[in-house]
Image 1: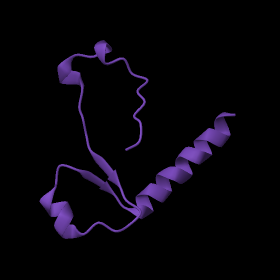
Image 2: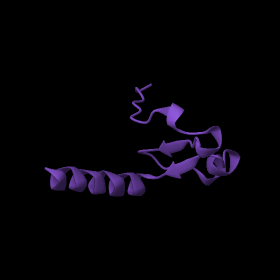
Image 3: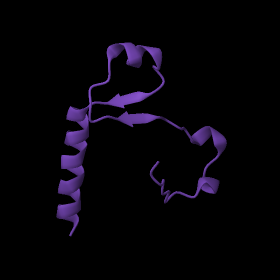
Image 4: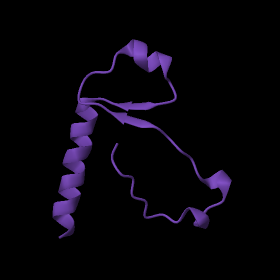
Amino acid sequence: MGEVHSKVNVGDYADHQAEVRLLYCSQNPVSSELKSQVPEVVYFDQQIVHYFQSVSSTILRSRR
């Protein structure tokens, strides 16, 4: 499993201000059946992952 890096000091926020979400970014389609079995997870299909990759690379290039 990859490392998680946090730039936010958790101590800066009260418990009611923090929210943990599970985001699943898949390179393969995720079946509707699986999505309905685990509805708490936010699923990013390949199309959405590519969109965010494109946006983030554009932001990185433009900030230089």
